[in-house]
Image 1 (cartoon, rainbow, N blue to C red):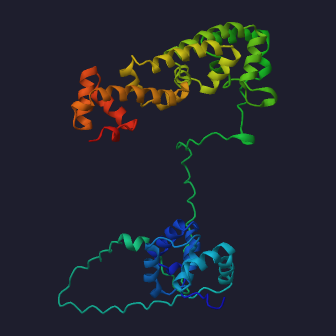
Image 2 (cartoon, one colour):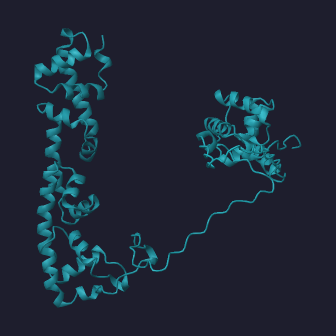
Image 3 (tube, helix red, strand yellow):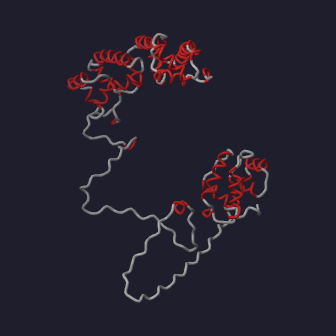
Length: 388
């Protein structure tokens, strides 16, 4: 390990060289942190930076190669040998050995001697010297450390001034987990089970579309068992106790089926319309035993999406991948549309010289929007088939 000696301070490594080595190690399947890259490059002198840039501009000859392997390549080691050393953990031993070595000190720079201003013949007004603007290269360049210079420390946060308590405070998110604080003005879950709570619950149920909307209304005013946050299961228990759940289930059944029909069988779209999560609709479908009705609604729109007579609708539906995935017909839809579009294009293939002419001719012949047909040809991968 005697040949692995530091030639400079890690902070003195030029940033472009460190970035190039980090990118080379990533391509060589041995990514390293910026600190590790600078630590390795401190083993090379400034004169070796040109060789490092020439090496990193080329593709890695072997893998894996880390930053210490790059230093080894600059010293003349073959890429295959360096890769074997990298895999065997040799360079980790080198890194640990260099940690015990003291960092080289940066010599103090001599301050430039300022020339004494000549005495003016006439009194002139003193001008403040303009502060030179710092370039981008100076901002991103590594800072030279001077031996014995004091280390800059972060300024302490200023204390709030007296008499500023009336100013508004930042709106931070409420604490979660075991740090959650419940409002002492909330009523308990046991209050929901009392007979006098039925009247208030019935009003909330009449104004809510589903049990999840009832829960959203009650969770701000009631706590759950043992002071925990209120849950949907506890709300369902309170509604069952007051005989309000059966009437709510009938309303939920109608709302779910109408929303799915309006959303053309898409559960996420129906959930957005109802103001609940897709998982909540799935739970309602299971608890209300609506799987057969929901499947019937989806099959209606599946047949519509696969019907050859609805070509214009199917071309517009081609970009709705989430909708097709929700209906579970993405592959069937793509295969059927590819077959139908290919059949139409083959009928006019002999009368066109380019793909653009073929699309325009086919769209005009079958009363299709040219942009939709052109997009379908591109997305279905049919462009190469009709290139002349």
